[in-house]
Length: 114
Length: 113
Image 1: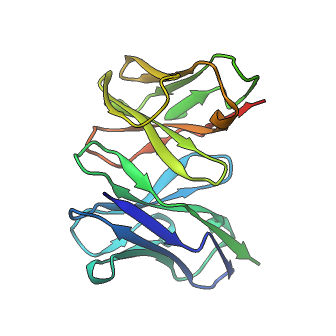
Image 2: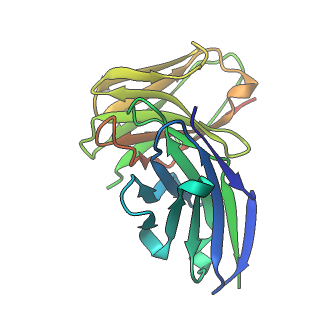
């Protein structure tokens, strides 16, 4: 069965610093992996997705993630944090059966300090 | 013009009541979903409909009944509400059932007293 684990429920960085949000996955089939962001009082929106093409995936708002099969990881990074990046970030893996079902991690709250 | 809209945004009700949450998408997508987010922000899929047909039905109490009158609408009816039903319920849609790019509504915060 597919699952994802996000290491660190809360990450705090200074504005301008590197953002690193960690995600490890477990999957019995080649996975499709996603990062979603949830701003306060809003629904989730897709940041980026990995679907077995390039291992380095670029997303919106300057975020990118690298798929590392040997480490079963899909960590999200951004070189320089902005105050507007403060939000909840969710890693997700696609379930089996091509049903569009996503299995989400527990989420990581990103705090950006001025 | 909101792509996925759900109403109401907030719902406060007593235990034992029956309530409905409505969802509409104007993206022309074939597939719609209901997700539940608990107090620890854990998100879990409940149901998925593709062209009005139920394709995902997770282990959800049968007090929860989704209804899709057409592919642009997916409503969620909950009977005999319990304290544990308190959560944020998100509606989402995707172009097709195999497309995991989901577009989410802004959520309905349900509080059962």
